[in-house]
Image (spheres, rainbow, N blue to C red):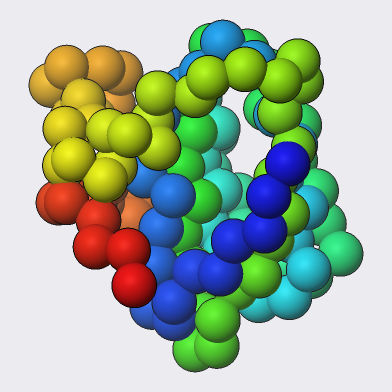
Length: 114
């Protein structure tokens, strides 16, 4: 379980999947949620259930920070965090399934933790 802040206009948890079920709960902000072949807007007070193995991406499309909580079940190692830090995430539409049409592009550059 964790808490994430996505910066305005493009802060992102890039296109990825994992073996665990996951829930995102948006506390505040406006996001674009890609889940498999679906594309939806999410706002404060909304949640999304992410089934195991399904590719997903959350992008802040608003003018303010987006704050959300995530929870994996069952607990375990999740490779995409290491891939984001190293800049080695598989590329949407090349190495893994494409993003839904009209989605904000996947960020695959190395993530610099402050």
